[in-house]
Amino acid sequence: MGDEAAIRALIEARCEALRRKDGAAAVAVLAPDLVAFELPPPLQVPPETATDPAAAQAWLDGFDGPVETEIRDLVIQVGGDIAYSHSLNRLSATRKDGRAVAFWMRSTLGFRKRDGAWRIAHGHTSVPFRMDGSFTAALDLEP
Amino acid sequence: MGDEAAIRALIEARCEALRRKDGAAAVAVLAPDLVAFELPPPLQVPPETATDPAAAQAWLDGFDGPVETEIRDLVIQVGGDIAYSHSLNRLSATRKDGRAVAFWMRSTLGFRKRDGAWRIAHGHTSVPFRMDGSFTAALDLEP
Image (cartoon, rainbow over all chains, first blue to last red; front, side, top):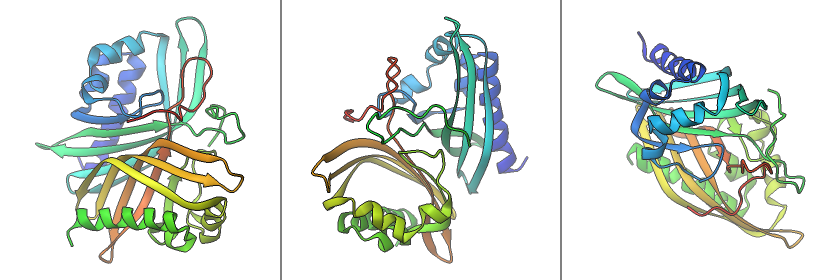
């Protein structure tokens, strides 16, 4: 498999793990020193938290049914053993309290190949915020 | 100059352009097909807007005095002609209406080397938002 195909498979494995709500599989694609910029604070999530299977499982267990990810405009750039990607991702799921969650976010990923295997070494996930004085996250945007 | 040093110089050139409020210099470091995920909507800014010197100048002209960027925890990963970086950046400036703006954001950049010159080919800038029901951007976080 070529590098770009391997990275696409890695991204798909992550999405499939979220869909199945398998915390261990969701973090298996991550490098142990992952630096994560997530949707909620803090500014950056330390690797030991971001790669913790129990933390991933606890987050996934907050949902009823699958956590679906639709990916659009995926671009992957590979150079040797380093790569990055960017895409627009739509997360859709239903929280255990019955509240439906569905919005588009931006995803940028950094990848590293070690011993022949690609892993996610950096993740940056965000939504823009409105500069109309409200400073609220713009969760209703469409690509 | 090595690749990592060249990329550091590119990032510094961008910051220096903002400091001097030089719109043309600020976009000179960008690849023409840059895909930008910025702080305000839309989800992604088209290359023709993100690389437009006049648009950059208009944004910079909204400030009185320099637009300062402090960079912390910068990590650069280089593979051949592709690289990415991530850092925490503190923007500080004073708007023309006298309002001071100062907050930490997350910055991820994708780079491409073409004809021996590195350019920024992807930029993702964000702040997290609070999941306390307010969905407001967390502009008061410290690294």
